[in-house]
Image (cartoon, rainbow, N blue to C red; front, side, top):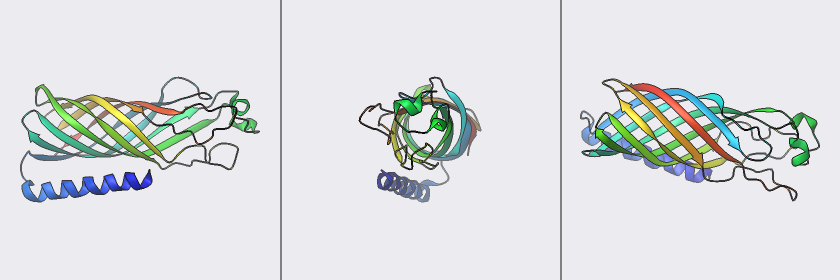
Length: 205
Protein backbone atom coordinates (compact mmCIF):
# COMPACT_ATOMS: atom_id res chain seq x y z
CA UNK A 1 0.00 0.00 0.00
CA UNK A 2 2.82 2.43 0.84
CA UNK A 3 4.50 1.71 -2.51
CA UNK A 4 1.20 2.37 -4.32
CA UNK A 5 0.69 5.59 -2.36
CA UNK A 6 4.13 6.99 -3.20
CA UNK A 7 3.89 5.87 -6.83
CA UNK A 8 0.62 7.79 -7.24
CA UNK A 9 2.18 10.83 -5.54
CA UNK A 10 5.17 10.81 -7.91
CA UNK A 11 2.94 10.44 -10.98
CA UNK A 12 0.68 13.30 -9.87
CA UNK A 13 3.63 15.63 -9.21
CA UNK A 14 5.21 14.75 -12.55
CA UNK A 15 1.96 15.39 -14.45
CA UNK A 16 1.39 18.73 -12.75
CA UNK A 17 4.98 19.82 -13.37
CA UNK A 18 4.73 18.97 -17.08
CA UNK A 19 1.47 20.85 -17.60
CA UNK A 20 2.78 23.82 -15.60
CA UNK A 21 5.79 24.15 -17.88
CA UNK A 22 3.64 24.10 -21.02
CA UNK A 23 0.91 26.48 -19.93
CA UNK A 24 1.66 28.02 -16.55
CA UNK A 25 -0.04 31.35 -17.18
CA UNK A 26 -3.50 30.19 -18.37
CA UNK A 27 -6.65 28.98 -16.64
CA UNK A 28 -5.89 25.55 -18.06
CA UNK A 29 -4.01 24.92 -14.81
CA UNK A 30 -4.89 26.33 -11.40
CA UNK A 31 -3.50 25.76 -7.92
CA UNK A 32 -4.86 26.40 -4.47
CA UNK A 33 -5.02 25.60 -0.78
CA UNK A 34 -7.96 24.40 1.30
CA UNK A 35 -8.87 23.28 4.79
CA UNK A 36 -11.80 22.80 7.11
CA UNK A 37 -13.81 20.36 9.18
CA UNK A 38 -13.45 16.61 8.95
CA UNK A 39 -16.39 14.70 10.44
CA UNK A 40 -15.19 11.12 10.60
CA UNK A 41 -16.02 7.76 12.08
CA UNK A 42 -14.69 4.22 12.04
CA UNK A 43 -17.52 1.88 11.07
CA UNK A 44 -17.02 -1.49 12.74
CA UNK A 45 -17.72 -3.66 15.78
CA UNK A 46 -16.14 -2.25 18.93
CA UNK A 47 -16.35 1.44 17.99
CA UNK A 48 -18.97 3.98 19.01
CA UNK A 49 -21.29 5.09 16.24
CA UNK A 50 -21.56 8.70 15.13
CA UNK A 51 -19.28 11.21 13.42
CA UNK A 52 -16.64 13.02 15.47
CA UNK A 53 -15.05 16.35 14.65
CA UNK A 54 -11.54 16.66 13.23
CA UNK A 55 -9.88 18.77 10.57
CA UNK A 56 -8.16 18.63 7.19
CA UNK A 57 -5.71 20.90 5.39
CA UNK A 58 -3.78 20.71 2.13
CA UNK A 59 -3.31 21.86 -1.44
CA UNK A 60 -4.64 21.01 -4.89
CA UNK A 61 -4.02 21.38 -8.61
CA UNK A 62 -6.78 21.60 -11.22
CA UNK A 63 -6.33 20.78 -14.91
CA UNK A 64 -9.26 21.93 -17.08
CA UNK A 65 -9.02 19.55 -20.03
CA UNK A 66 -12.07 20.57 -22.08
CA UNK A 67 -15.07 22.79 -21.56
CA UNK A 68 -17.10 21.39 -18.68
CA UNK A 69 -14.59 18.73 -17.62
CA UNK A 70 -11.27 18.57 -15.83
CA UNK A 71 -9.31 16.68 -13.19
CA UNK A 72 -8.13 17.65 -9.74
CA UNK A 73 -5.35 16.15 -7.64
CA UNK A 74 -4.88 16.97 -3.97
CA UNK A 75 -2.47 16.32 -1.14
CA UNK A 76 -4.45 16.43 2.12
CA UNK A 77 -3.59 15.87 5.78
CA UNK A 78 -6.71 14.87 7.72
CA UNK A 79 -7.24 13.99 11.36
CA UNK A 80 -10.33 12.54 13.03
CA UNK A 81 -11.14 10.93 16.35
CA UNK A 82 -12.94 7.72 17.23
CA UNK A 83 -13.76 5.97 20.49
CA UNK A 84 -14.00 2.29 21.39
CA UNK A 85 -17.05 0.80 23.10
CA UNK A 86 -17.06 -0.07 26.80
CA UNK A 87 -16.69 -3.79 26.00
CA UNK A 88 -13.94 -3.55 23.37
CA UNK A 89 -11.46 -5.66 25.39
CA UNK A 90 -14.02 -8.47 25.66
CA UNK A 91 -14.91 -8.40 21.96
CA UNK A 92 -11.30 -8.65 20.81
CA UNK A 93 -9.76 -10.43 23.83
CA UNK A 94 -7.15 -7.72 24.36
CA UNK A 95 -6.78 -8.43 28.08
CA UNK A 96 -6.51 -4.71 28.77
CA UNK A 97 -9.42 -2.80 30.32
CA UNK A 98 -7.83 0.50 29.23
CA UNK A 99 -8.94 -0.37 25.67
CA UNK A 100 -12.57 0.15 26.73
CA UNK A 101 -13.96 3.60 25.98
CA UNK A 102 -10.60 4.72 24.64
CA UNK A 103 -10.27 7.84 22.48
CA UNK A 104 -8.17 7.28 19.37
CA UNK A 105 -6.89 9.89 16.91
CA UNK A 106 -6.40 8.75 13.32
CA UNK A 107 -4.35 10.94 10.98
CA UNK A 108 -3.96 10.25 7.27
CA UNK A 109 -1.99 11.75 4.40
CA UNK A 110 -4.33 11.42 1.42
CA UNK A 111 -4.21 11.86 -2.35
CA UNK A 112 -7.67 12.25 -3.93
CA UNK A 113 -7.72 12.04 -7.75
CA UNK A 114 -11.00 13.58 -8.84
CA UNK A 115 -12.95 14.27 -12.01
CA UNK A 116 -14.41 17.79 -12.13
CA UNK A 117 -17.74 17.95 -14.00
CA UNK A 118 -19.45 21.31 -14.48
CA UNK A 119 -23.09 21.45 -13.35
CA UNK A 120 -24.48 24.03 -15.75
CA UNK A 121 -21.82 26.59 -14.82
CA UNK A 122 -18.02 26.50 -14.44
CA UNK A 123 -18.43 27.74 -10.88
CA UNK A 124 -20.25 24.64 -9.62
CA UNK A 125 -18.66 21.22 -10.13
CA UNK A 126 -19.47 17.63 -9.27
CA UNK A 127 -16.36 15.84 -8.00
CA UNK A 128 -15.95 12.05 -8.03
CA UNK A 129 -12.98 9.73 -7.88
CA UNK A 130 -10.71 7.53 -5.76
CA UNK A 131 -8.58 8.50 -2.79
CA UNK A 132 -5.38 6.81 -1.64
CA UNK A 133 -4.35 7.35 2.00
CA UNK A 134 -1.46 6.44 4.28
CA UNK A 135 -1.92 6.31 8.06
CA UNK A 136 0.66 8.57 9.70
CA UNK A 137 -0.51 8.34 13.33
CA UNK A 138 0.49 5.62 15.79
CA UNK A 139 -0.94 2.19 14.85
CA UNK A 140 -0.13 0.63 18.26
CA UNK A 141 -2.83 2.45 20.19
CA UNK A 142 -4.46 -0.54 21.91
CA UNK A 143 -3.28 -2.81 24.71
CA UNK A 144 -1.39 -5.43 22.75
CA UNK A 145 1.96 -4.69 21.14
CA UNK A 146 0.65 -5.48 17.66
CA UNK A 147 -0.48 -2.76 15.30
CA UNK A 148 -4.24 -2.25 15.47
CA UNK A 149 -4.62 -0.56 12.08
CA UNK A 150 -3.35 -1.25 8.60
CA UNK A 151 -1.15 1.44 7.09
CA UNK A 152 -3.20 2.21 3.98
CA UNK A 153 -6.75 3.01 2.99
CA UNK A 154 -8.49 3.19 -0.41
CA UNK A 155 -11.68 5.24 -0.56
CA UNK A 156 -14.25 6.69 -2.91
CA UNK A 157 -15.00 10.41 -2.95
CA UNK A 158 -18.12 12.27 -4.13
CA UNK A 159 -18.98 15.90 -3.55
CA UNK A 160 -19.55 19.44 -4.78
CA UNK A 161 -17.10 22.28 -5.44
CA UNK A 162 -18.17 25.93 -5.62
CA UNK A 163 -15.60 28.21 -7.23
CA UNK A 164 -16.03 31.89 -6.44
CA UNK A 165 -13.68 34.52 -7.95
CA UNK A 166 -10.94 33.70 -5.41
CA UNK A 167 -12.50 31.59 -2.66
CA UNK A 168 -13.50 27.94 -3.11
CA UNK A 169 -16.04 26.07 -0.99
CA UNK A 170 -16.36 22.28 -0.98
CA UNK A 171 -18.44 19.52 0.58
CA UNK A 172 -17.73 15.85 0.04
CA UNK A 173 -18.38 12.37 1.38
CA UNK A 174 -15.55 9.86 1.66
CA UNK A 175 -16.23 6.15 2.15
CA UNK A 176 -13.55 3.55 2.72
CA UNK A 177 -13.47 0.50 0.47
CA UNK A 178 -10.93 -1.67 2.27
CA UNK A 179 -10.77 -3.11 5.77
CA UNK A 180 -8.25 -1.26 7.98
CA UNK A 181 -8.56 -3.79 10.84
CA UNK A 182 -5.20 -5.34 11.68
CA UNK A 183 -6.47 -6.66 15.02
CA UNK A 184 -8.55 -9.66 13.98
CA UNK A 185 -8.70 -12.83 16.00
CA UNK A 186 -10.55 -16.13 15.68
CA UNK A 187 -13.53 -14.91 17.73
CA UNK A 188 -14.17 -11.66 15.84
CA UNK A 189 -13.36 -10.81 12.23
CA UNK A 190 -15.28 -7.53 11.99
CA UNK A 191 -14.32 -5.15 9.20
CA UNK A 192 -13.29 -1.61 10.14
CA UNK A 193 -13.97 0.97 7.44
CA UNK A 194 -13.44 4.72 7.49
CA UNK A 195 -16.16 7.22 6.60
CA UNK A 196 -15.99 11.00 6.66
CA UNK A 197 -17.79 14.18 5.66
CA UNK A 198 -15.43 17.00 4.69
CA UNK A 199 -16.51 20.64 4.63
CA UNK A 200 -13.81 22.93 3.32
CA UNK A 201 -12.95 26.45 2.25
CA UNK A 202 -9.86 27.69 0.49
CA UNK A 203 -8.20 29.98 -2.02
CA UNK A 204 -7.69 29.29 -5.74
CA UNK A 205 -4.84 31.02 -7.58
